[in-house]
Image 1: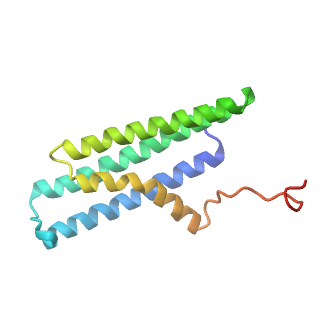
Image 2: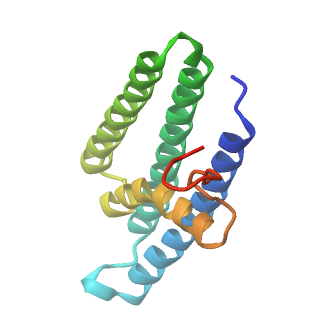
Image 3: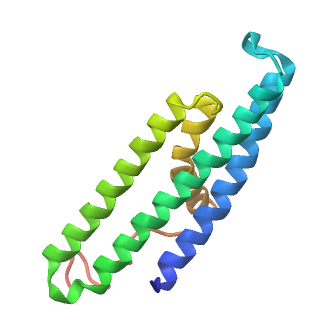
Length: 153
């Protein structure tokens, strides 16, 4: 699938932002275990669980973001058939994303070698990355204003 330049830029920014946040999360998790905060022991299984949860959670978050973007692009490409098709496609992409995230939550909770907290936090990374892009001015999600007052053209 070929993405529009706006969607490509957003995807690239989210990937980079999520990677940075994943590294920060792993470092924080390792420090928490190594320092013995909250009576946690720094055994190898715990450290591996932090790393595994962080990396897999970030991969799921970025993957479902890509999946949602592909669904959105497909809907925009089919926009010539009318507004209902676009809305239906966007809703389908959103539902698929939620289903994939729910499956990951179940895996993160029930698989023993994945640190559950470190596996679930990355689901917030795409939103945080988008905020970071907006704050730095690299992303503007507002619609351009028209030349007239009060919606006049």
